[in-house]
View (cartoon, rainbow, N blue to C red):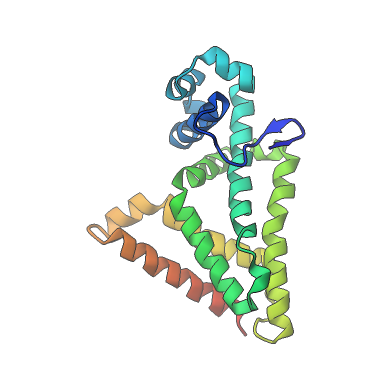
Length: 213
């Protein structure tokens, strides 16, 4: 898939050299950040040469921005695939929170890349009009759920989609971004699957308490 000439694969193909380079870049940017990851490392991990990385993506900065756009595109696509208009508003909200939490937990590399971009104060995100456009769907999705719930007097009319998205994302993001420190300090030896289920249920409870009157 392309937008304005930019490469954004819908599904990464392990047999494609370009996709191998892209997958390698995701892993290395997540591990070392833009400044720490080197083109030679990306090439080596992909089983190719730096020359081929440059051929396909020109510069490390261009590759990084495309990875950042891909990460957000995948998160938003996962929400769209839920087809939440088929569900009553409360059930739709529950499914969205659970899916968001599980998606974050299943894609720690994606979350680390977003962490890295925040450490850079959003420097590269500011260069991408596409990121603003693609992420609008997150609020549109929530606005529909909230509006349907408000019409049935299930959700408070003072609640807005932006705040619910921040609450939901914060809970899910913290679970991944702070997993090592939080676990070492407070949950050492705990069952990881049980903890994930516990915090997913907690996220649902927090969001419902916030949106319900």
